[in-house]
Amino acid sequence: MDDWLDGNAIAGVLVEIFGRDMTTVVRGCPSCGARHEVGAHRLYRGAGLVLRCPSCDDVALRLALADDRRLVTFQGTWSVELPA
Image (cartoon, rainbow, N blue to C red; front, side, top):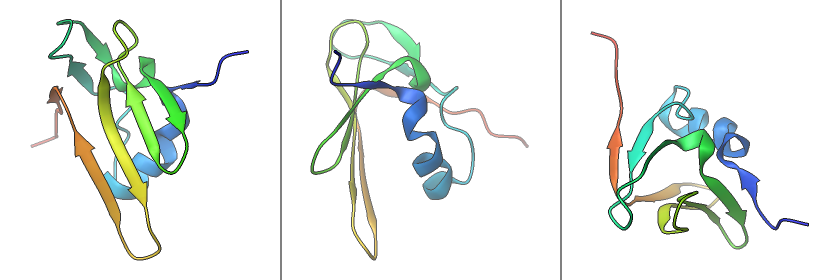
């Protein structure tokens, strides 16, 4: 049994924080150079949430949830397209 979920499992939390669907955002991994949509990444749950590259397992995002705030740390190149 796998100990991770696909990146789509974090969709609701990301919409809460950013106000839009982030699962289709493309991330470039600085370790292996692969480019994947956030939804294709692997989500690990523990004290916080961690997204990892599906190609090399490098950390893509760390998310800590507190009652009064959200701490998000991004790694790599995130390409977010916003409407004009």
